Image (tube, rainbow, N blue to C red; front, side, top):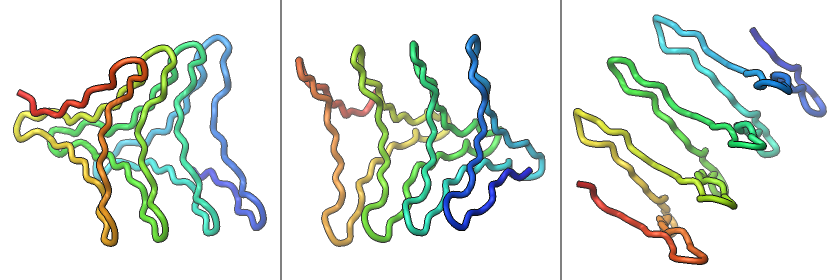
Amino acid sequence: LIFSTGTAKAGNSGAIEIGTGASTAGRGGMVQVTVGSGTSGVGGVVMVDAGRSTVHTGGAVSLSSGEGTSTSSGAIVIRSINSGTTGVSGMLIFSTGTAKTGNSGAIQVGTGASTAGRGGSVLVTVGSGTSSVGGSVQVTAGRSTVNTGGAISIAAGEGTATTSGVITIRSTN
């Protein structure tokens, strides 16, 4: 099945919109994209690519959870699934592209602010293992061939009315 808009010589090409209707007394409908399973090769691929531009910034890919106007907003889960009896679970790669002139893109991981509670936490955790050494966490600043290398900065949170936060670096028992 191919769903495609035509090309345009002047102006924008057409859009494809897939969505469900709203509900006044129930949940909104679901949009599910699933690849079929196979028994003789690797699993199928789901690819989402934004458009390329030869004269301006390329298109963006935006993924947002639903707003909960009276309770919590929805979650976004990006994960690889468990491996079988042999092999490893899939890898997650979050990376920006290279740049020929100027800076390459940044990766920002953060939580939103809160006006009546704690700010959310950011956790980086390595899974445990039973047959080898534990996994590693590695933080490496950028290398430069013409200037100073990149810095690593760790700062505790400011406490404007009380004490600032603590930084603890230790090996465990």
